[in-house]
Image (cartoon, rainbow, N blue to C red):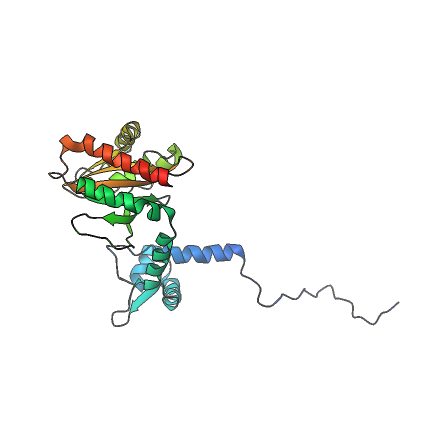
Length: 270
């Protein structure tokens, strides 16, 4: 019996709903592109043109221009109108400040970091591992007085005391992956040989602290120790650093005990 309703044709296609959400794969790709653009900037590349961003990211110039324009609208990039160059925007500073304020490590470790600076008289760094490198989230300089709440910079994983203190306690596959990414040379003493670095990491693991003998910055001696989370996994490190004449090799063992004690206090507080 005919109900009067039109029968769908075999050639008819279902109507797509308006405002359909973007597929997850496309969203992930978009986020990856944004991250790749932001990663073009560093402390040595503070201001970049679209052409430079295109070259560093590997994206076509038109794509780089479109992404930069979108990031500028969102406050993640600032544009220098007169020179047509981009810088990281203040919105990222706001996000970083919020992230640090919400980070248990930053909050719990701060009094121990300040105490370590007073005990040793040396510059103190607190860093976390992001899976690729050490990110310094707090620095305390007893000679300079109180430090600002927000402080973020990267530290190479293979040639800084905080980096090596973290790397020495990572699974072998992580160590191999990071070594495979390359071991850039920063000074004459930077370890760039895979076997030599692995031997150094084994020694760090055995004694419980790391040494940076001018491997990242000439003339500096740094001592670092790992920080464990509640599962026992090393995810951060603390270090002291100073000119080699202020951190003499004869005092390394004594200073290392203080640094290790501080790292253990922070681990316990977490």
